[in-house]
Length: 359
Picture 1: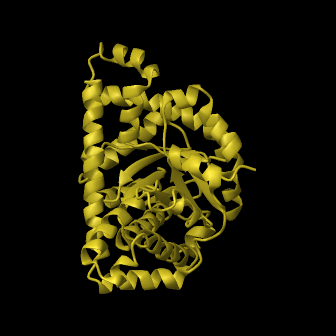
Picture 2: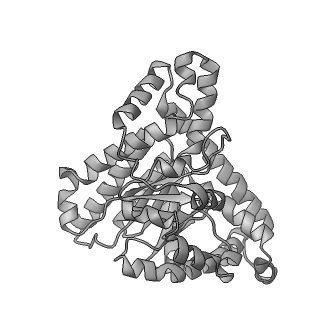
């Protein structure tokens, strides 16, 4: 068995954080599904910028689209929606065989809508209808406006991957918004058993930022915490998840067939070469979670990763790490806001480059 496929028995699903026509048409994605148990796919503006700018399979279609009276954003969507549909079709057997747990493929709304709740809702509904696949997920950012939109989209029965979370507050706000959306849907007499959502929590950027702050502080206590912040944060977030979805608040919805909103680990490629290149995979394997992994990290884990149930271990250590960070004056809520704003800026820049490509 592949080392990656060995993760599934622990209750976690591995998704691929990459998508291109070459990946689809070459059979490489199917091989990842068959050999490594890849169970879903995520995309973002940076991924599609790289794909469209470097994959020759887009060249002819883009040239034809430029002859039509379309906006740059319409041309972009005309290029990528068929890719999302084809990927959904490829992963549909996973969706069917798992009764709707696996096989999801994510497409992001324009990052320009990050602070526009109504615009996000309209764009998400439009993309959901255009893709027209039950195993699609629409990605929205976990800004204040994005969380408002997310709740309404869940109430509308749309699968959502809500993304760019870097703090416990952001994560808790999203998980409770999901439950409110399902409660509104159930109150309207609508089915809740087919709605799926994931909450994408980012890892490596947390350590990059906080390691710098800890090095600036420079005390032995601070330096000893380097590389521990992100894993401590998500281990505590996972405990919040379990309390919420395996507690009394969710019981009534569960009886109606509703599914928990799984936590998804994102930004799991290690950025600090001093740390293990499989750090954010090995340490975060646990039940009812997803890890969306870039190609290089997949290769690394396939080579030397070890699958074991570690997410639900050393929780006291994680709590103590967060307490030690607070004692040093680090405010995780401010860290979350800063990193979310930086992430939005990066996606804005990638999306703007996409629009230049398709103009």
